[in-house]
Amino acid sequence: MIKVKVIWLMIHACLKLNFLLSPMLLQLPTIMNETAILESLSAVINHNLHLFSDGQAKEIMNLKTTFPQLMQECRSSIEIKRRSEHPSWSTLEKTRSLLEDFVKTGEGIRAEVEELNNKKKELEAQLKVIKSNSLHVKEERIEVSRQMEFHCSLAMEQTAEIVAKDAKVNQANKKLEHSLKSKWAATRDLFS
Figure 1 (cartoon, one colour):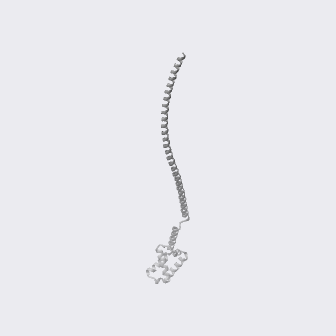
Figure 2: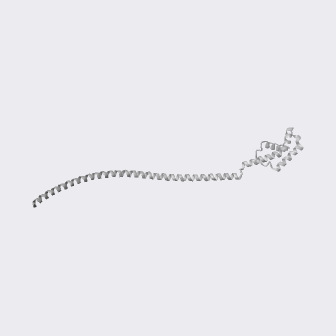
Figure 3: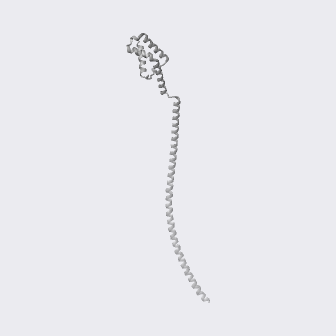
């Protein structure tokens, strides 16, 4: 009798608490257990109902009447719970496929970023070389400009010297010509 009360209280509590699932309750809605519980409830009602208070007896009678429906609700609840705990394979496959796509995309982005960083380093190295060459060219241009100024001033000095020498040579030529003409005229007069 105590065994029947314990079973009844356990079933009633489980059903009233919306069948909070535990390992014991997962085995509850089997056909063999349902039959055994219905037989126990029938035995209590037929032979031992007088041992319970009126309220308890009424609950036992109500439980026997509603037990098959409660078990069906329990099965439905367990099935819904199982579905929510174990997503379908298609959902898992879709999720796995999405994760693989995200991983591939992430790897692609990572590779692209690495490639861009390498290009950036190459361009920075090239820029450094260009700046160095630019500085070298600038220094050469300054040196060439200095040398050009020096050679221009030297050429101007030499031009001035040449012009002065030309003037002296012209003057010397004129003197020589004048002297030769005078001597020629004097020599011609001697022969005339």
